[in-house]
Image 1 (cartoon, rainbow, N blue to C red):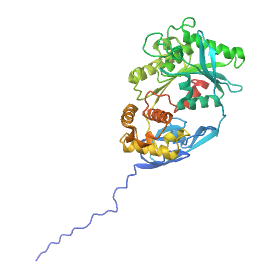
Image 2: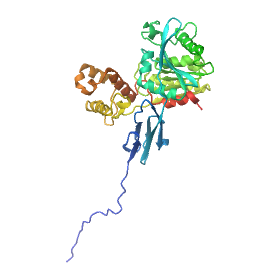
Image 3: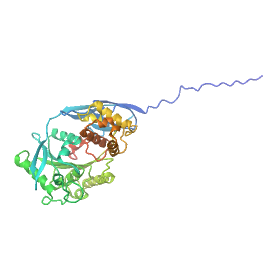
Image 4: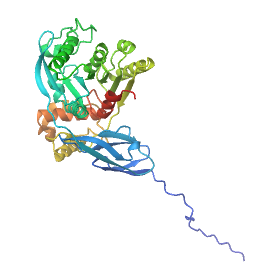
Length: 397
């Protein structure tokens, strides 16, 4: 009799496919961003907050991966583990000097500082609705001012004539710098800049051999473009403003545009970012040095709000956790939408936000400022401070 035996053996696993590793470790010393990330992820890293006597210096380690060598940088995760170390350096301690200097028609508020042996000086220009006081006290602006002074630049901050008078002289519904008429005789804002500059010359604080520069935010950025052209500055920078196509077509002054990817200002937005790129390309096509930079959004991290010394690490973490628990941060901690939704909800019912409700008004404004920086909304930001410093120093070299 024949019999058939059927046996069911377990599959041979000795030649099974190797396990695919798709995540690697990022290690950050002296900062934040440590964790495991998938290959191809966009990874952000940040240095620890610096004190009033420190500046961020550089990233060590796998720094060649980074898009930028500043306190906040990002990179695309490679198929290996990487490590970074944030280095800081001591800085000069200084205070801006406040005074009033005679403009064409009236005294103008002026904040200034000129380090010994300064290489030149930079006019910093506020945006629509701003003022000299507002700009000089902005945390993000202060970080750029700190970088400028410690690199040997003098700084001057004044304000638009409309900001000083509170009168909308040209009837455009806003208080800001007047870009037109583009002359130094009838446009009071250009005359005021000349008078303030001449005052420092006449005092011997600086001299005409020193290079002049301008750096502005929003309307101040557009004004920086026109101002640098009219007075033949060494270089100019605009944050969150495309400048004008007319100036781009005729200016011989090197100019950098620092834009925000998600700028929601009605005068900027996606079209303004495209116009800034076009203006930069126009300058370059004419043989004039120009740079176009655009800042991409970044996640909120628990220590973000401790960048300001009156907010502790524990309070910063509590703010982060409150935003997370209320649904304002997504799974990767990117802020959802724009800060206007949070501001409206907080104003409607502050008791629903006990951590935020415990902050001072100044601290609340700072939190909003930092969130806008993370979103890359219409906000002055210091993420490109060193790139801006490099442009003022070397332009396109």
